[in-house]
Image (cartoon, rainbow over all chains, first blue to last red; front, side, top):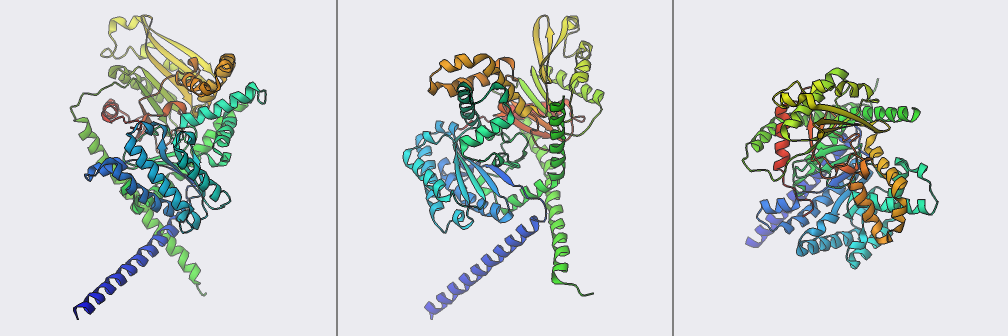
Length: 291
Length: 264
């Protein structure tokens, strides 16, 4: 009798849990349907900051925060694609992060390998949504096995026609710009280009070419940074000149659906003024060119 | 007239959407009340800052304003900067197309002599102001006191976000291409990086501001030189005309208190 009672309790708990999951899923779908009644950003860039501080606040080792951040990332990818965002750029690992202790770096690389291996799994969100993945940065600085895995993921998802995911790994914006400039200067020396051809549009092309992206993929509509820090920290400096900046006080592992919806409604609130500002800027540009 | 389910659904969806929109708007509206409190708490900290803010960046996105009034506010900001030890200000205005009329107002040395608490009255007669039009409307005003630069004001447009770096690249190509050609291929990236970091021999604004204040409802760096904003602390303020010395002091203090990890 005792055994049958336990079985019944377990069945009821599982049944309630399943119902709750379905309820949350329906509410989430409804919320994403509603938010898409307003303008949705085409391209969102995220600086996932605060993993180590989050871990310290909970008495964990700083490097313990990164796996939790990875879970938030999985959720964030789902939210982005469900809400209609077509391109996502993540700042995963900076060239400056090589200064961190060896143990933490190795842990981050291991986490990256786990995440990339998951991406090759057909059940993973990347395959479900047919996401095209691009790794952006100076990948030659990374361990060889990680580089091979990265190239596998890019090759595997190259034909996907769904949303795009750009992961900035071993990346800084200045390094990206200088790499593009070196190619440009080499072309000038080889007389493929002249000095008069150099303008912002040309640099756009060289940066995009260097990262294997198309020129249209570059500029994010929003740069989101978590943990309360209000800096770009050498992320997409060239591309973010005209982007909206959103600094959230939440640590990245704590960034939830409410915060994500807050971000989208915030964008919708600023969207009209932002479009007007872009039009004024284009008008100024045309005026200067006319002069 | 029969109503279809689709006809009923859309208005209801829009109603729920606007309710949600206003809920999130209210939450965001109330947040600054708590943010201002925490900013004041930060300012009460007694820790001695390890470095000083020397370069301030300002981006003005708060709409059209009367030129004389904005110039007057800008002069006040310059005087406040001098009192806080800030010797460079980079000012980007998303509305201004031509800085020439502004420069004529800003260049008058008597504007800076009006506050004797900041500049000693006896040295006012030695104040001079020089203007340099770098190219395509990028102006640099320098305030001199007895042959020493005491303040530099960079005036840029909203296009200068990219044009600033392009000017640096043009200067590199015009003047350093032969030297660049001699450098080993493996060192070329570092050469370009160092050249641009140093300010491209005056073609760019030269140094990175420790903090950038964005005024207006549009939280964007519209126009601020892209290269130089790498590690700048960014703050948002509602309006340039209502910006006070106390606000600037609080912001500078917060910048000094913020830990600078830079990847570590």
